[in-house]
Image (tube, rainbow, N blue to C red; front, side, top):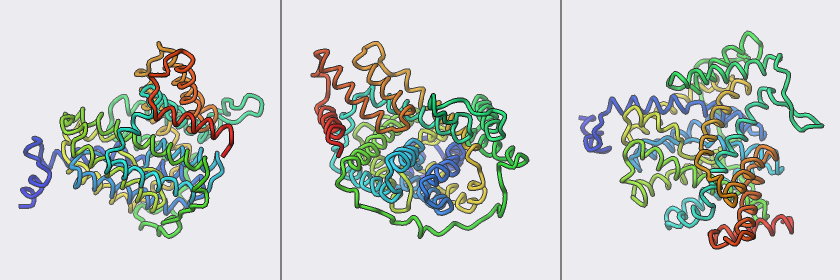
Length: 436
C-alpha cells in the first residue's frame, strides 16, 4: 500500500525507477557529501561560534533543505552549507574584514531573502548575466585554490613567512605528515571510485591521528544527543547594514550561491537526463526556491549559505531520478545528528584531504575558460590569482570585474560588457576611491 502511494507521489513509474533504487541512490549521495558534517563546523568555529551547536545546525539544515528539495521540487539533489561559501564567511568576512559572525549571518540571511525575491519574480536571470561567463568560471577556480590553501595551512604543510609570505612547513611534524598521508589516501580512494571517498579519507586520517596524539577522544561517545541551538539561533546584527562593504558581502554571497546552484541543478539534471524539465521549467524554479529558503533558514539557525551539492551526481549515477532520492538522503542526515561526537572529534589536519580534493574538483572548471582572448583570459587569471594570494574572495571578484571592464573599454569592445557589469564596476570604483 505505502509503496504504491510513494510511487504516485514521486512519479517513480514515469521515471523508470523504484523505491530500492532511490534508497541506494539516497545513501550514496549521503556518503559522498557527509564530509560536510566534519568540515563545515570546523571552518565556521574559527569565527568564534561554538562547534557543538554548529554541528546540530548543519545536520538539521542538510536534512531539512534536502527533504524539501525532494517533496517540493521532486528532484534528486542534496543541499548543505557550501564549502566555498563557508570559507568566504570565515576567512574573508569575519577573520579578514573584521566583522562579527553575527553580522556575517545577517548578510547570509539578507542574501537568502533577496534570492527568494529574485526566484519568485524571475529576476534571477538578470543577476546571472551580471557577471561574464569566464569570470564566473574563474571565481569557481579561485575559490577552489583558496579552499585548498586553507586545507594545507590547517595541517601546517604551508606556513607563514615574514619575508616571502608563505613557505613549506616542517614536513616532519605529525600534523603535516598526517595531512599529506590523508591527501594521498583520499586520492587513491577516489581513483578506485570508492563510495564516500572524501568521508572515508577524513575518518581514516583521523584514526591514524589517534596513536600520534592528534586525534583526541576525551569524552568520546559513539551515540550522542544533539546540542542546544540557543547560542547560535537567530543571532543577527544589523548595525553594519548601511556600509558599502556589507553590501558587497551580501552581493558576493548572492552571486556565488546563485551561480553554484544553477550550475549544479543544470549539470546534474543533464547527467540524470532530466534537462528537458529545466531551463525555466517549474522544477528548476522550485529547486532554486528551495535553495533560497534553505539559505534563509540556515542563517536563522547559525550556518552559512546553503546550496545544492554537485555530489548529488553520485546518487544520480546509482539510478536516482526523483525526489525520493533526496528524501532518503535527508533521512541519513537525520541519523547523523546522533553521531556528533564522532564528527567533532576530527582534528583540522584530518579535514585537509577533503579541502584539497574539493579544491581540485573546483579547479577543473579552468579548462572551460577562454584564455586565448586576453580581454577574457587576463581578468579571469587575475580573479583566480588574487583570491588565494590576498586571502580574500571579494578581492578576487573586485579585481576581476574592474580589469574586465577596463580591458574591454581600452580595446574598443565595451559593447561586450553587460550593463549590470558596468554598474557593479562603478560601485567597486566608488568603494575603492571613497572607502565606504
